[in-house]
Image (tube, rainbow, N blue to C red):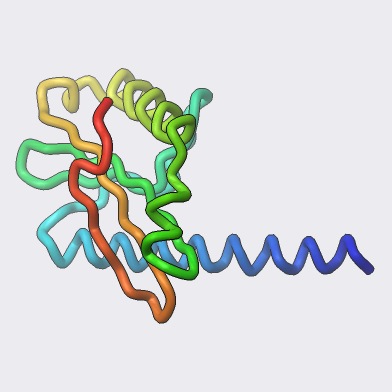
Length: 124
């Protein structure tokens, strides 16, 4: 029975993550961004959302937790490094993006789907 409980919790967590990514995409679109990719997987890491606004590509990490502060604290240094490597991989696959600016943002989702968009949340 214990294995099923862990599976159910994992499914709920994945569902919450997908909902948070959808909500983050809506926020970005409302701010004038165009979503270029969702859940981009590279051999070196994954990026939740890639968006573009004017000449800037934005690589976005989305975190959903009980509070916005908990969501912010859950982005580890290792995750940041993986996101940067995945962004470099994406740019190598999309050479037109190499001429543009890039930025790493975080969108935090808390209880009752409160949202905080942190521009330039970390640097490459």
